[in-house]
Image 1 (tube, rainbow, N blue to C red):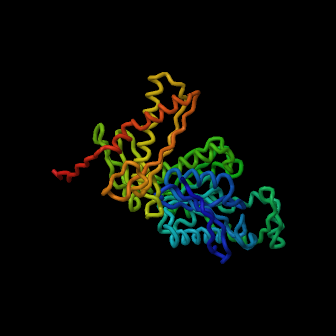
Image 2: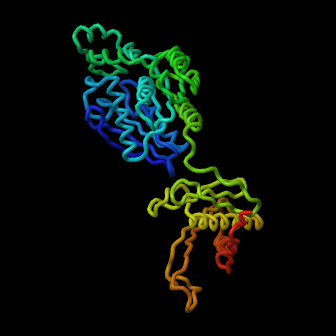
Length: 409
């Protein structure tokens, strides 16, 4: 199951920045850094939905509040586009020091312009994806166009952005005027994915055209059709995340190897994935699964442990055996639920133990829930049948394991 961790690190201006790190189950294929839109926060729905969706494709995603926004410290009035870029670099440095340097940058709106500008300063970045990004950082001034004269005249003004008041200084205007996002795209030298909605009412589709023309190959454009600028509809955010994951897969390959081929009926193939100390692919016919150990013993907890699979085999076999018997006898059994667990116990816990045998035994605890209009005799009979399931009988029978080395020829 994916994890979500609250993180703090020092930003470009020395303030403490609030962040959230979404981690996938098992070893991340790569770390990604997400930059939110102008005057937004890391918790805007588009950012949170996309980050969490990407964990399903194996990416770890750090999203953070720029200085003076969301839960981060600092005064927004003292920030600008340059400080946003510097905050991104600080976030990348934090990942590099504590986890792994980011291989993928994702930016939404002005955050998209920021990741294009920052990528050239981050050697670890292999690919950049933007959502509704402007081709010119100064595009954001359209959101407070009525206040521009006051800012120019007085050096500062109180403006309203997305229904909230913010203080902007003339230094902000001077700074964004110095940044040419199209020039940064032209010199990016990284694969670039532009996602943009033709109906975007905040940042027009012409911005995507300008960035696409400026960028060198490899570059890609994907239409978000009728999505709004903030990707308020969950299906649009998930589509954007899935598209980014599929596209980035070409440039950020899986950390684990491909699973081995099936070896025929009744043969299970288990091979190390290369991810973590104990993670293995388990191939049974057309079914591919993962086996691992819990984090407490050095694993990634990417899949059940070997004993977990053994307990699952006992539980599944018990349930199937009871279903076959109930159907054959016409018993009113609606549903079977089997809970199993494994632990080591002392020999005296086992009534069948004999003198002289090993003083510790494997104990499987099995609890069966039977749903349906069954009387006492029927339940008792089903409990007897549970002990006759093939896996149960195998566990109680002498077992021979023959091992050989495969001939390299």
